[in-house]
Amino acid sequence: MRKILVATQKPFASEATTKISKIFEKAGYNLIILEKYQEKSDLITAVESVEAIIVRSDIIDAEVLEVARNLKIVVRAGAGYDNIDCKTAAEKDIVVMNTPGQNSNAVAELAIGLMVYISRGCFNGKSGNELKGKKLGIHAYGYVGRIVAAIAKGFGMNVFAFDPFINAVIIENDGVKACKTAEELYSSCNYISLHIPANEKTKESINYNLLSRMPENSILINTARKEVICEKSLLRILLERPDFKYVSDIEPDCKNEIIEKCEGQYFFTPNKMGAQTAEANINAGIAAAEQIVNFFENNDITFKVN
Ligand code: 3PG
Image (cartoon, rainbow, N blue to C red; front, top):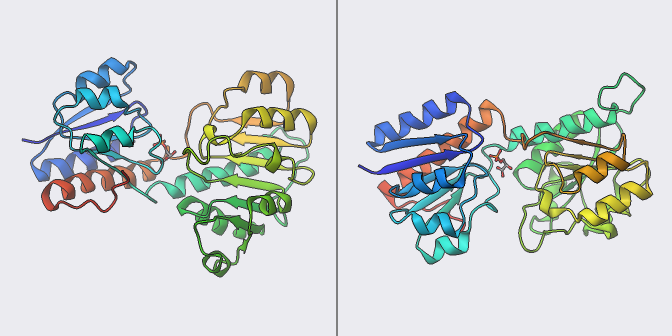
């Protein structure tokens, strides 16, 4: 009997786990669930004999892959797979997949929610600002970026986007202004919402050159990854410009300095909660489970990323 592990430090909603269990039960696989584990050693012990793993942001590094001698496939139930050592996995013939689009709506709704929250002074009862009529720049027009654009248009925002991998015609067909460069996007918009993945090219790419172009009373919204921000530049801009605000679903490493010196200019969620909805968990969890069954039963590698 194939052994499948769901290893989630941040557990799925219980409905998602129930649905995942049913899929594997039907396939005749044995499911092991490791939730809310505290120590890496717990993960190491759990992976030893399994053939497939479903994770969220859980770190699957070379050490974990080394121990998992029967492992054939790792599915990241979500979009970003920067938590998985894809290179080592490939060397060991282990397939890595993600479940693109399955949790995007949850992340997009949070991005909009953060925009409203910070614009209304974190609901402090004082006079704030509306989103209507403001210019929103979407940095990367993928699954999440597109939903953010659609919702923002409902708020009456003027939406811009920059994505070097998407044809401008596709962007403009959505009623969104396609910018030719990131510089143009940052110069044009008072709200910038980040939807770029974290990889070697994007790490620390949101730097002073871009941030300093944003007009007066600007807000940077990060529901992507903390690694894409150059924190030195972020701190510099927050200190130079009291009109600049940063809201993030990820606490930056320089959090304490921001809290100490930049009162009223920031908000961070206590833990990454963009995809933390029952709907997102169910969508991504079911997709991950079905991808594993399809991989073993039909050699389907459609969502392979390594
Ligand atoms: C993703 O990459 O899919 C999101 O960042 C969600 O991550 P999570 O599953 O750890 O909440």
